[in-house]
Image (cartoon, rainbow, N blue to C red; front, top):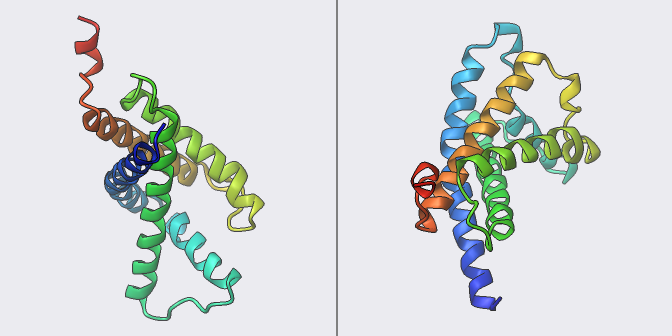
Amino acid sequence: MTLQRMADDTLQGSIAGLIATVPMTLAMKLLHRRLPLHEQHPLPPRRITMRVLAMLGWSPPRVPFARKALTLVAHFSYGAAAGTVYRHANRHTLHSGPGTGVVYGLTVWAGSYLGLLPALGLLTPATRHSPRRTALMIASHVVWGWALGEVTRRMDGLPHAHHAET
């Protein structure tokens, strides 16, 4: 693989991850509003972002808009980075699409919420969150994965799965 091809894949994966983070974020917001009031505390992206700031020795911004902006930058950056990994992992297959995207989205959720984030001290494991909040985050990652797979499939000019069978 050439350096140019790697750079192209990185850019395309980042773009796909960014685009996929839009419907994911909307799903998170909509599902969050449906939680009981006592479970409507900040979603993980905000908690993670504020804890990273604290770990770096920076005070979280006092202005709500600044907290929201930093959270969105961090959230979309993570989506872009994860999209890049998906792109590189699927580069040599014709299996990019919503199905593989959903599996990858669930893998990202499990790896992040059961492994990486607790290991870094940024969040308690998902097994200690309420079932509704865990379901919200799993559903949001399914939406993200589906969108990531679909955007990647379209970028690659691949046919829909049901078209490929005929």
